[in-house]
Length: 390
Image (cartoon, rainbow, N blue to C red):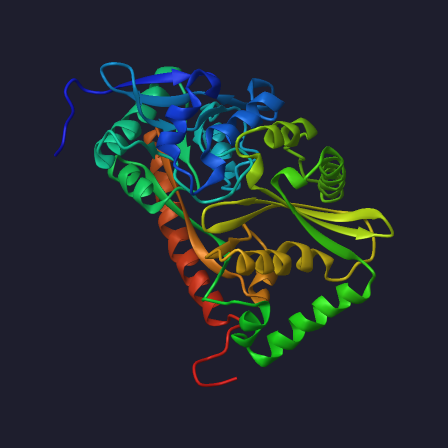
């Protein structure tokens, strides 16, 4: 077992601005834009994240004896369970029935962003196993110090989850839908890999959008101007209102994002009819992935527009930019018919109260078996041609 001398120490930060961007990003890497200093800072600067919204930053920094940052965790003190996409409302209710507070709790996550990625962000100057062990212990210790009920690290990478479960966290499985580029050079190459029925259905859907008079364009980085963000946010807000959802991201966030170091990674797919933007899909570009994030659409009759803007145009973009995959996020079994297959997602949960911990552990044991079976069944019924058959 590797150890450092002197042992690293942990500091807690109420704003990501307290940690230098270069030091944070040396730990975060460049593959996933959501854990970058710039993206997380934009959420804080815009006020989408903060005490007023129930997401109080308390980021951890693991430091060497001289104070240099070795590893970090994007961590938040939560007073509710909104905007997480890994639902624990039943756990909160059980805690309350037992006469115990469930909030506040600690959340290791990217707010409002169900994108899998690293959560224990480790720089090159420390062994990864040592850093993960120290960060897991630090989160458990902080939970006790501030009187939080629990720690939840959501949409984490397998290596992070393995270290957390070794420290006593409980494993939770979920799933979402990703499209994988099997060496396609054109969209037709992708269609050729599908069953005849699904291939014809997708062509029919795309043809219907093309015949509707709605034009689509894809803007990246600096090509996205303030009026484009105005249109997107108006549609995003309207879509949330129609579906009784919470529009977590305010207009200021997109302004801060565009002005930041990660603004060049924004990808906006616009649908325009008679000079008016009637749909828009917000994505972020990683090193080998296009991450689908939010959709905004007007209340108009536009069959298949959502599929075209969010799924097919994303595939077009990935193929043309030689990206390995598109992550379309959680929910929506309709994505399977369009080439997006279910993949497991992982979260880790530390629950301090022994009785609640036991109940949650039993529930998660059962849930994991159900999720694994569900993923296997959905993949078996996928849209791709069986070997040797059409």
